[in-house]
Image 1 (tube, rainbow, N blue to C red):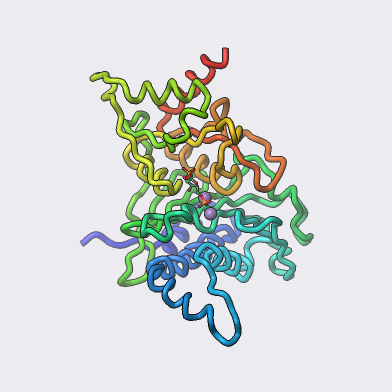
Image 2 (image 1 turned 45 degrees about the horizontal axis):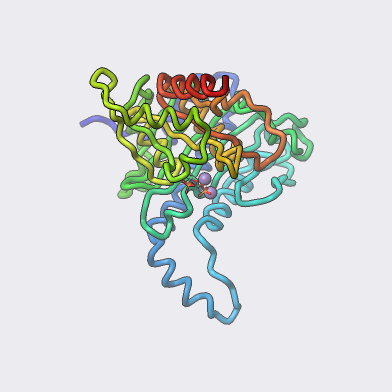
Length: 336
Ligand code: AHG
Ligand code: MN
Ligand code: MN
């Protein structure tokens, strides 16, 4: 029988690879693992929760039932606040970042940014959703309160990033810049267990993922690429397959394993597309690069973008290396 390696065991084992590291990052990853189990538990009961929610909305306290994305937001915020390994956190759900004022948090070295629940529109229809997180070393001095510059760092400065997918099984995938590893939640013991060691994305793929309803308002380069994907060519195994779940995490995860490209380009209405650089694109860009793939905004590397505001958006082309390079090339050609 092969032995099972749990997330905590794996983190501890890897911790030994960095003799000078203090273990704070390891503890932070463990805290995120715990928070995601809490979210997972709730996600699994989403339909039932809606029934309970309707009843609770008439309770004496007059409390309104928390939506799942607010629940996930609170679960993550509480886990990292009380875990004490970060001095601040920023979330897609909140206008402003949070600074944690306890002495232990002020002394910590990191900040975290997250999309607590990705794919919100899929919650009510029992389709895969996720959580995405991104960790940076703080810019401000240890002992001070976190400030905005801690959160406005380029993706290339990330020290860890990951996601949890609440799918047909629940998985946590993360990187600390030493490759990508995936863990599947084993419900009978309630532990994430190593299931996908050293994940690599194929250099080429045959899947393209885009909300094609928007295609007419995308740039000619993007249109040219999508048309290219649909043409017949034996050598490149075209036409490719179109796959679009509408949950970035789920679309990304499938393409990471099978090879493919996910695109959320700018449109006439929204030049910068829809996805948020710091909560969605940067963390997945870190993972895809660590797995041998690429992430671009159509012109250059996602992780080289200097953010100027917390909820900034950017176009995203992410996945298999050769696919991202081709769409970049077609965009450049159309622009010239
Ligand atoms: P969120 O639920 O965190 O707001 O993110 C939704 C995002 C992403 O998960 C998904 O790929 C994309 O929105 C889908 O957008 P469209 O419905 O415009 O295709
Ligand atoms: Mn999202
Ligand atoms: Mn979200």
